[in-house]
Image (cartoon, rainbow over the protein chains, first blue to last red):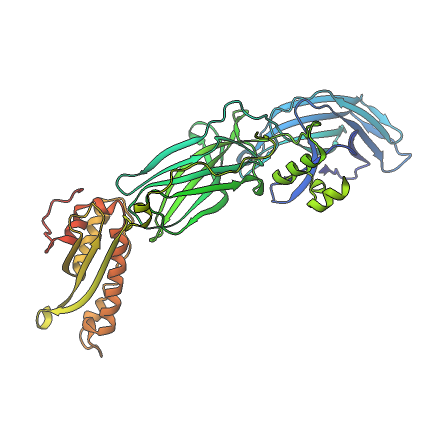
Length: 333
Length: 160
């Protein structure tokens, strides 16, 4: 996105040094459009060049300084004017003076801390971007380059299953179990619902994944619930002693990792909602929070080529060009 | 040997189901029939009442097979009691049909066969819906409506 002043005399653009090799990730913008941005992780260096191109060669460009910033900020939609910057780095590229010809400036932000994942939600946005600015007396000329940051985690040491008995006294008793409490984004929820007592006429049962985005603090807390998935797990009336299996593949849904109290500004949490619907459309439900985390796409060198293909195919690779049909994989090797 | 890179999606272990549970009668049997409309009374004091028969195996109901006669205003009474005392959203009753009570109609008014059938069907839907509600099952008014010969409008409301 660039800001064009009236009678702009120069163009700026920002080019990353590793633009050829760096992976891009898709990210949905506020208006629902999906775009691809360069993907960065915490601690990675952000380096590149700023090209200032004079529109009218020969005409000098007077400026108050040229700089590049790396910004990480949280923007609450109800309070657009106030951006909460949690990362703000500046590199001066040129002191006030004048440019007689187009020029390129190198920059490097070494081992930049990027503590949170990029997020665009219903009421809040967290984004990272580079902003190059040519300072001018009346109107600055600037250009922004958005990047996407993913936060990675490793398999949690403790990942207990969730098992609980719930119900309505003398009407409906069930025991539900989910195999883990922490799932990565391409994981599978494996579970079961065991019926202990059924005195109502159940028509069907489904499991929903609900995303709850919380913004604001104290008395101004606002929750926005969004049903990310609805998955029917049972059609028909169960009786006592029946066990209904659950197998829900998360890779099919667009979800983010769980984000707790990010910079004290917002949270994004996920809940499994088990819903039973009876013949009169009455709904009985039990909500349970799960933690979602992002696993790195690291391919271990010790695995054989075939095993690598198989694991990517099973979980869904983030690089579409790598997924192959079995016959293709055999042709390649 | 479980490879963490490939998810384990095998079903969780569960107790095998007892065969008497699997093939026995379900514990949620509840059927209420509203039928046999009869016109009672004479002249301007005539009204229609219906047979309300409930068959169930739910332990909360004292009688597993009960039969009572009820009229439209009894259903209205039940709806009002439940709306006042419980947090349930009570389903709606078929209409009051006040127009049918006016004179000089071309048809039988309240006693028109098609109207009685429409009302009978609506009342049956209503009572089945509400009797299956776990919270309504706790209310004394519902039990009195379904299982006692006559409704005591001076009863003490409360939970079963």
